[in-house]
Image 1 (tube, rainbow, N blue to C red):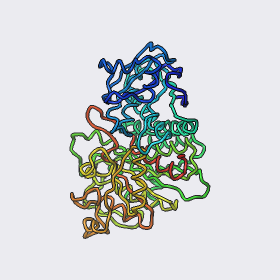
Image 2 (image 1 turned 135 degrees about the vertical axis):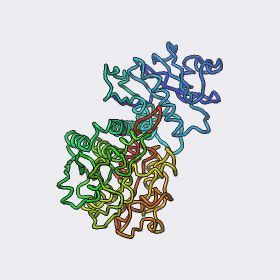
Image 3 (image 1 turned 120 degrees about the horizontal axis):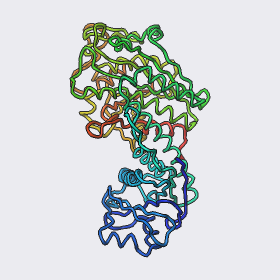
Image 4 (image 1 turned 90 degrees about the horizontal axis):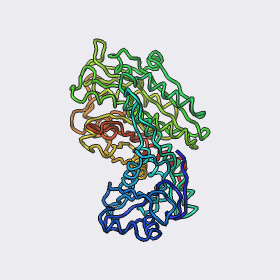
Length: 498
């Protein structure tokens, strides 16, 4: 999709469709006011007649508007002016994109970006716009038979700015937004694929494809023999019940010389039946999404590499299935992790922490500046935060604040939960160094506390995305989160945001 910016007035922009807005009280957006003046009050008159609404989610496409250069004017509702923020702005852009996606409109010019939004500038308004458009245009058809839907006609997006300086910022924001939208789509695709296609080997091939497409990325994939040689018996205990071989995927991007890298570790359980501690049948099909942590960190690598950011990034993905069989790990088994710590497996459905602890230990060799693991780890996190915010847990309050701030800026929000020594008592075992579960109370926190025992001395954080990685019901599908938040964090650390 071609991305351009403009400082010309809405009425003077030659385009297939110019997008403007109206607030709930009838106040016109800057772009709408300009067109209304050139078109002898066309928009304000339609508002008074009730044909144009300021209600969020509403839109009206006007054709043959006199006095302007655009072929069409799309007027979208912005809601209350006093409540107009990032969320309502993105909803307005999404409404506009939905209104044009089924049409033959090939190019649009959005003047919604001229509206003031607290703590946002031309860069973010453009980025939010392109990300929202990308989300609306996303389709998953890889596993459907028959003729594929025709490609979307939209090929060009113009972002309005108030000045040349803002136009420069907006173009950068749009380019970053396009890369993030592509990363989100990749993460969605990986999550939405069925587990008989998106296997550990498929995740590995996806990483290798990113390697081939980006000169700065180097990928290696370790098989079970190599994983065993490393002493990653906690990881291998999870995959012992399936015939599909586990993979340890390691991706490295070097854009900043010898600087210590940011390391992202993603849980890659491509299907989680729970092992011997079998899950209930209802909703088990959604356990294909248990690899969304892996999907998000692989996708984040694709964004960083495509933008050629001046930073070093390493991605580590322990990928396997968790299945029941005669060879599966049993409740009561004791395993030895790569770190040497022994673990009593009280519940085989608490497998994410078993693969992550070895991946975190393995990641020490990269001497990370920051290490963040991303996982659909606990149902307890969904109970605590619902499906709106990702949980962030860390032994470093400064890092927690940095991640939370990145989530706010990216409109991909997180919320901090505690990690502390007082939770360790729940992980005590009579027979091993620690148990893999700590009871129902504080389940998300005890899971993070378990991981913290393998990250001593590291600047580490844990993101539990169990509530935010996918949606259920009629809208079932991957969300691509937290790719925007992770990318924002990396953009900020690489000083790539103006």
